[in-house]
Length: 133
Image (cartoon, rainbow, N blue to C red):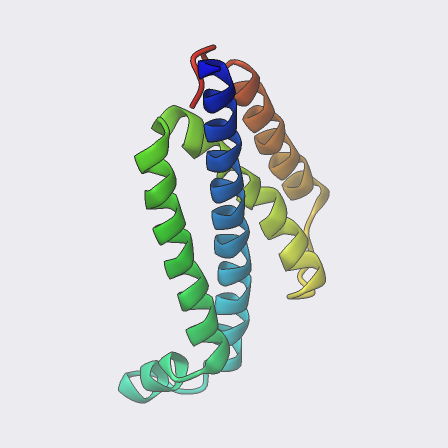
């Protein structure tokens, strides 16, 4: 029965961290779009105010705050060595967001890098200690 609880706890932490990783990936992409929309034609305080008041910047920042809250909660429930590697998935999600949401050119080298990081996440996850999160 104790191992059943550990498995449930592991899946709970995994779900929390995956949700956090999705929030930070979306937040970064939306923030990037908002910063590009705020323009580069002005400098100084006016440009900073314009950027801060941009709706995508606000939404992106809020999603990143959600990420930190979920990440802190996950760290309360599990070891850093379990939680941190899962967030590596943000590199792959970020590459997808850059390509399809921001319409950026993502080179084959960057795709390979994101894929290698994701594979590293799988390796670290498989190498987890038997006792649970």
